[in-house]
Image 1: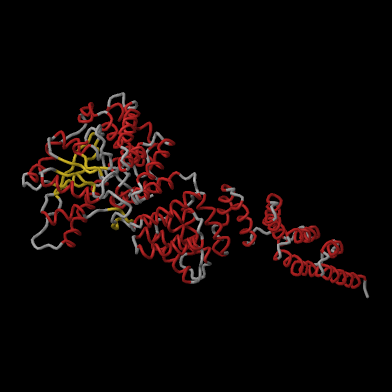
Image 2: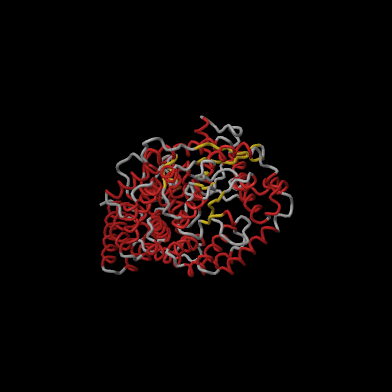
Length: 627
């Protein structure tokens, strides 16, 4: 027998003893016999991995697994597999830094190993090292579709970093595959949802569920895609309830369920769901606002007022929140408190309106960043303007997207300034009137409509300098009422002409509108407004937006003349577009008439978009659900 044969025999005997001792639970003795020469033999290492390390990991005996893996690595420092397993075990046992170092070393030794790359990226994601995870995902993005777990983690890392385009490159190679794991399908669907490709997201999510996927997040992504597409509410609710059964403490899920219940007018259940979500995440103010809204809709006015009072105290500089609180106080019967809060609101705002209107308007360029417009809404508007102009929007140079966005932000702030001025400095409305052009010509057709003795409906979208419209009508001595969410406080400058939607039921608002029309007044309505989460929606440019057939119904039933009235900015002066809306044709049934009326409305919306980004407003109405 040669010396080599003798060593091999000794090695086999040694490993047999190691395995026997380990099998008998004598781990320290087994480790002592696993000397470096024994551990250096490939066959021995395989047996230790299979018969000692793997069972220890399955049993949760991480210290044992780590001790044996350290011996294997010591005997063969270039084994990427052993380094990877050792790093994973150490991270599972809380030794994150040391474990990650071993995993990184494994990756350096075998950079083409996608399984190792997946573990390396997982370590970065779990460590919340967003920048490093993003950079690593970029390196492997091209090859990631070859390995399901790596592709999943790349999508997680890139979407967390806001790199939607990079995520879509991976998704394009995955979305048509039939072998996606449920976890990978979830990430693919979520990326498609973020990109506004709701139909594709829905198809992938549904398929994953049909193939046995059970993740509550799969149900959630399917429900969100259906919400975006305006699909069957009952099916959406079923998906959300199935998800809640499996993840009762998922705050995002509970919020979505609560919002859906509000849309279906199941207000009491929505209150219960949103209360639970708010208790799980007490620091989320938006969630508390949604709970307050649910409480109002469920007519728990006192509780809603208590919650909103606290939120308003915490954020005294939010006019929208202050107004919502005031109207809730009125609903709760707390009239004096509401009037006091309204006086405080007006007082704070007047302090910022010391200069002339023209000077204040000119300074808006210094505060563009404060415009409350989500980035996704700007992206949507830019894309829409691009399509309508047949290329890059011609409102600015094709390469200057920032200038276009800034003009859109300016338009939003300018309309908010108009509201503040008319509400808080009514004695100085003459300064606003100086920038209004062409009022007499604009209202000529409205006067003719009113002469028929049936009143008139003046409809509009939430676009342009909206609040200039009622002022222009007042200056032209047109008898009118206007629907708005402003609280009906005695000290409100235009309280006599206001129909407040924030403190009256839909039935009460309808009665006031009918009364005003019978009295021969013009009634101003933004028909894309939403009086409640259950407001009807229609499809527009691939999105579901709020749109009410209320005006169309009145025109069809009563023969009320109606006009679309849209103020718009031109060279920082306000002009007015007034156009007669369709009237009922002889024998025309309501469905056909409503379709024609809706089509005319959205054609005017498109015309307004072409007047420039400052005329979009990008707040409320059709824009509310686009983020």
